[in-house]
Length: 178
Image (cartoon, rainbow, N blue to C red; front, side, top):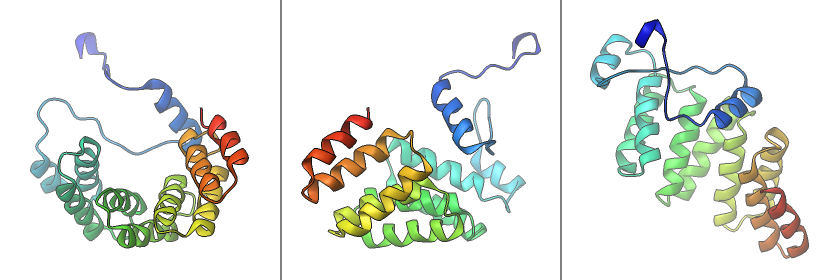
């Protein structure tokens, strides 16, 4: 922080602006230098976010999904009602091919917070993989209602329409995704 000013680098400001516009104020943390996760957890053991952020980073990197799942489960052990933890655990489980467990975790996230568009989207994508096209379409339609500007939702809807035999509608939604 030169001259008493704090700067943040390597951030997609357009994505951040869109997130704040769509979701409002967000909780988070900014750390500098070497972060000691164990020390952070020792200082605030009742806060699931340390485990959550650690698991989220591992999941984003994609190098150790098992460890990511463990960290996210640790967050949920601290606070079982932490909807983002269920959402991101579901994402990890889906990436590991554990579709039934992923669907259950998405559903739990939605029980806790029905406004999580990404949970509806993830559930829809898992249901599509399980061959439940009608249920997948319903979940993805809800995701589209909650996040109409999210191109990934439109792309997922296009996949469902293509699989359900509506190629014309699929092309329309695929164009909306871009």
